[in-house]
Image (tube, rainbow, N blue to C red):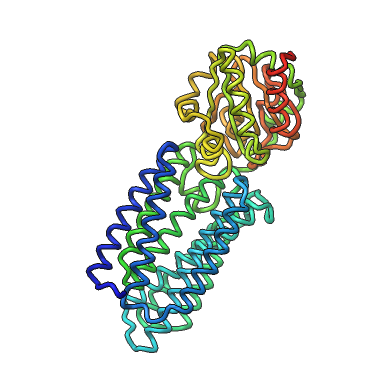
Length: 465
């Protein structure tokens, strides 16, 4: 059945409304599932309306692409671990960018053959190629850093910003020339320059800023989709692209504020400098650390009035969230108040820890954001840090030479006693040594986070302390 233009427009409008409701639902864990359902429904209507439109002449290749894509997506979704979700998101962003580039090039070839090119269209194609190519290679680099295929450390060289500026200006110049002349040489130049620029913009961004990079690339992918919508004359692509682009930009700005970062510093080359010759970190490493046993931690927690648990990427790696839920229930049965403290950039993707805790059915009212819970640490008996690192590092407040200096942190070190669950003394993703290791009230418990938490659960059940 072929839809009329008006009917298709109404279907697109319904889809757009559902996408807006999806974004609203995703603003809180309690409504996130509903938000996902709205998004799924909106996309199903959008795809159906597009396939039923008069512009679709053949369904053979489309059917093959849909079946292949759905099969690959289903397999990836079932196999992917939450610890690998950030790099999956980066990979998906790269697909959007690449699609924008290919659609723009394909549109140019088709319209040139039909002799229907015009400066406005070629300007739109230029925008789609530039944004899409930067998104593609930038996302590939982000994926490599997150997956460990590339070093998470910033890659900098002399004249880096000047080189980026020169390539950006050259890309704009070729884009203007392409819009005016339809030159194939300019089209190739735009594409190559944007692909290189995507790489050089992301390589100087270090691991501590990677969550911001993910949301920033999300914004880029939205603008790439919007540019594609203009090229194809598809209103829904324009609307959805603008929604994704704006929401990603807003999220990036919020996260930069949470990390005391300048979004311009992150976008145009990372943040922070190498440590100086003398720093608080260097002095702390001379002091040594204390280690503790599971029984020591259980003794403190069982008699505590309040325990605050700070989850991090180590919890995600160990899949310890379900064991933490059991630990919380056992402590609460003994009259202990248990709360969870979430930093805006905990993990390697916005909302990473919230999703994991929700997966374990930990009540939403037990999970508090940084600004809400920081005032509670001084009156807390035990802070239990499960695989977090940079987000609790006092170097962010005490060491001006640290790359993370100025970033607001969870002030876990102000609790009476701090137990830090770690596999080793390796620093966090930013590569910065953690001053909290060396505080007088901190003890480290070495081992797999899940095994350690399960040991605490066993000790509480058995009364061994």
